[in-house]
Length: 298
Ligand code: GDP
Image 1: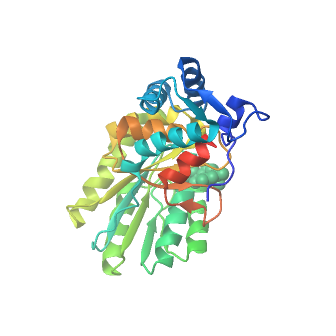
Image 2: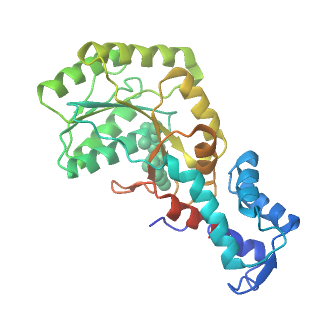
């Protein structure tokens, strides 16, 4: 269940609350399509994706009289069609440990997402280890330790300012020695210094590959839904500095900008493994395209 979003009732707004009776019929004409496009753009779907969604929806139906309910259902179905190919849970490999590198700008929700993931996998009977790889932010390390305690998962740390790659190597060694199923590695998110970050991530990868040539098995990019269209830029930037294999979008609770997820799916086709819907440990939900599309169209 997605919590209520501001964007809920999008079509209700279009038709006016009083008029938004399910049986009320409207002609699907250019004006109507334009209004729908505007609503999708306002929900941060981006112009290209909004146009594609509405024109697909209108195909073969222009000039027809449709009920509000039908329009909603058709639009939601078109949106779900864009989302379905990318809605894939984090793939689990029989690898021990499966190494998941977590990247994203500071504040996007990396720490929180790692805590939630650790808790979910632990609950599923997996042995999890966390490496607090953002060694430059003492607060991030402390936060991660708190999450580790909540999740009942050990968090490996290193002194502030020390080399994250060396911590990652130690974490790999420990995770292998203990037969852990999953190693979650947090990383720094200082995009201001892109070159440094790129080198830092490359070094982490190089070092963990000494222990397992196939690691990391996943590189998760964490994105904050409230940044709207900026999330698209972040994907572009992070794809240049890391081999991003999938996305987690956080803060989808209480944002009208959820449409950006549709734009992401349309533009990049990267798997969306989960969505963050709150600040608590259980607030990480599988990504359900139909539910999401229904909530977005309202
Ligand atoms: P990091 O800097 O990327 O590690 O980000 P944090 O994990 O510290 O998260 C930054 C802020 O976003 C914190 O206040 C979190 O509680 C909050 N946050 C993270 N995920 C979510 C989410 O899904 N929903 C909401 N409402 N807040 C979130």
